[in-house]
Length: 226
Ligand code: NI
Ligand code: MN
Image 1 (cartoon, protein in one colour):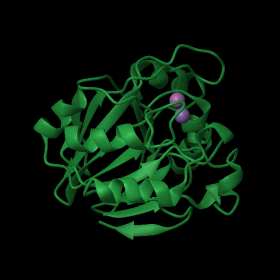
Image 2 (cartoon, rainbow, N blue to C red):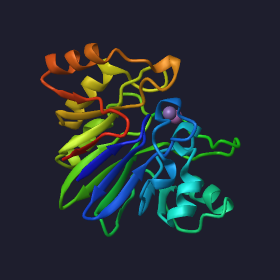
Image 3 (cartoon, rainbow, N blue to C red):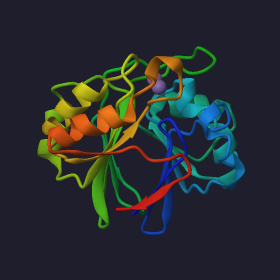
C-alpha cells in the first residue's frame, strides 16, 4: 500500500491499483497550499463525517474523478443533492466488499453536521481489509472502550489516529487507543491545522516511543509504503 498525506486528516491510500482518498480537506487548508487538489487521484472517496474539515473538497474531486463516495446514509443523500450520483451509503456496524477490499464502518464518538447545517448522521471510522494488509482510519473521535472491538475484530498493520486534542482525542488518549486496537504502528492526523490543535511533534513522538509505539507524523505531500 502506498500512503500519501494531503494535510489534516486527508490521506490517499493506493491498494491493489485502486486509489482511496479519505476526508478531503485541501483547498481551505493553509498548510496544504503546495498540494494541487486537481491532480489528486481517486477511485473511492471515504468520508468519516460531515464537518467542513473532512468534506470541503469531496464534491469537486468526486465530480472530476467520478470516484465512488463511501459515507453514511445522510451524507450520501446530501451528496446526491450536490449532483454526485456515484455514492455508496453505509452506516455504523456495516461492511461491504469493494474491488480493493472490505470496508467495515465502526463507531466514532464525535458529532456530524454538513457545511450547510444539514444533519450529517453518525460520525464513523473505517476498518479496511485487503490482501495487501489491514488498517483502521479513526476519523474524528474520542477514546472509547468500543475500540477494543476493533482490536478483537482484525489484526491491524497500522492505524490513522487523531492526536490534536480539543476536538478529538489527544496524544495521551491515542496511546491508550493503541492498546485497545492492538496496533503499534500509528500515523497521526487532525493536528496543527488550527490553533486549537497544535501539537509538539518531538514530545508526541517521545511519548509514543516510551509506550513502545511508533508515531509517524508525515510531511504534507509525503508518501510512504506499507
Ligand atoms: Ni469533526
Ligand atoms: Mn475535524
